[in-house]
Amino acid sequence: MLEFAERAAIERGYSAVTLYTNEAMTENITRYTRAGYEETHRAEEKGLRRVYMRKPLGKA
Image 1 (cartoon, one colour):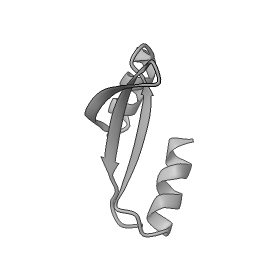
Image 2 (cartoon, rainbow, N blue to C red; image 1 turned 180 degrees about the vertical axis):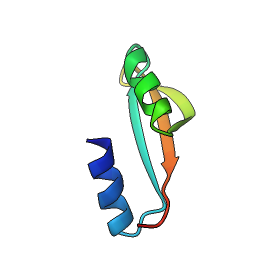
Image 3 (cartoon, rainbow, N blue to C red; image 1 turned 135 degrees about the horizontal axis):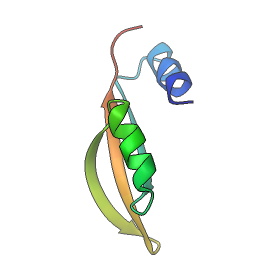
Image 4 (cartoon, helix red, strand yellow; image 1 turned 30 degrees about the vertical axis):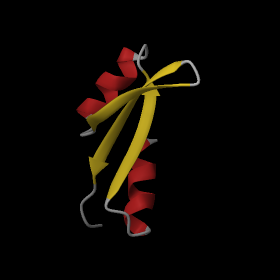
């Protein structure tokens, strides 16, 4: 699923993909890190602790 989103973003001319997950979802954080995403910041919104991540994209 990540690969599909990244390809679609490249095709549309985006230079990066950003996402967030819940801080408690440590397996997601590990999966995204292994896929090349880096944590940019954490924030609490609407009572949820979120971890924001970003991955720069190469050319298609």
